[in-house]
Length: 170
Image 1 (cartoon, rainbow, N blue to C red):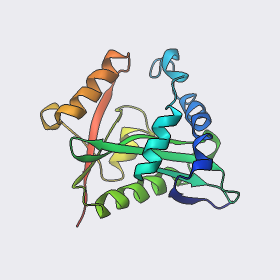
Image 2 (tube, rainbow, N blue to C red):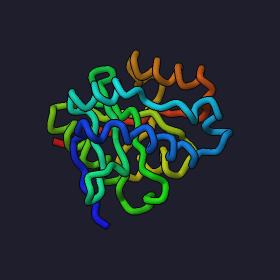
Image 3 (cartoon, one colour):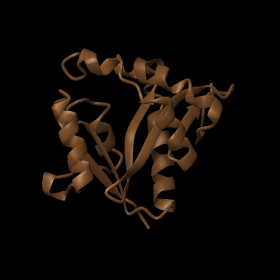
Image 4 (cartoon, rainbow, N blue to C red):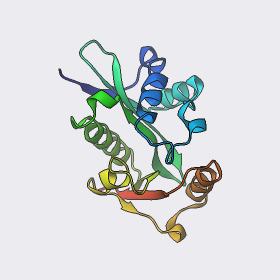
């Protein structure tokens, strides 16, 4: 089966929460407490990101989303808010392709850095991003907005979270 990465369209938005919920099931309850498992991005947030060109999907040959990457601007940088792939499709390079596509778009739009927050110790989180050129940021290197995101994550019960960044290549 082949998959295509592209900017999300209106018909994709309603499918994305089910991908989010399925991906959340991969985490242990220690890492992602029960209260976070049912949290999904609001439809309006997806629509807003789509309208601004900050939402990409991986779709199958029937144009059905099987993964997505949601981004925003944080501290003037391109910031990956979330990336999820249907669990039964993990390990096929789709996350790498989504990430590369979005990073290329960010760099093409003139952003100097791509940032994100993620779990430090989970193989498909920080180690995944590290292998793709991201590095962990020290607290002093995080801008005000990124620091606030990390604090909000901590206050909501998430542990072992780190900010990571990658410089756009010229």
